[in-house]
Image 1 (spheres, rainbow, N blue to C red):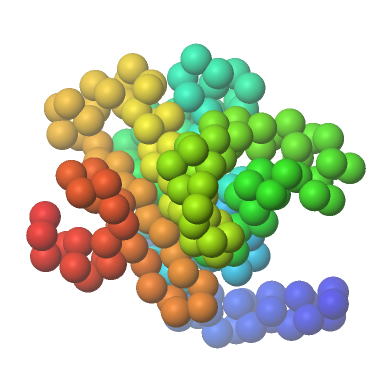
Image 2: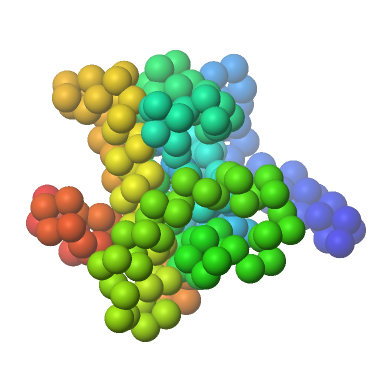
Length: 214
């Protein structure tokens, strides 16, 4: 496998880097990303590929189940919070995307009673805040089939993380003054479709349709 990684490095240097050589030169001493993209660590989800971005455009945070702590519990995840703080207050990003996805292992573990994660204390403790999302799913969708509940868990988790992000005073101020926009996305791995959460209808709408109604 290391040989394959080294082949990838060679391809980057001889092909990809050459294609963007001027861009990398311009980015040598500074960056000015327009978007903070918070995504799951899942290897099937690649933000830069998903939005077809160039180097320097997107500041990325990835963790299990694309989580963001609420302001009152923010010290429990200082890595995520400090990255958000830097992206917004130093880099001045104008948009934040929180992107969940289908078949999310973190969401599935919480929804289905942890399973093999009972032997992973750090992971289980990290994901415990998602139990509030699970409770909503079980209360409001008790008679739905398991596949539907899994998707609802993944999508409602995105909404929950967006709401958490909005509890930070500095972010509230930037939202109020129009300096910042936050969107929740859901990526379906099988189809490649991305849907966007629409607060007015409390539903996820295909990205191409969402643009047309804004």
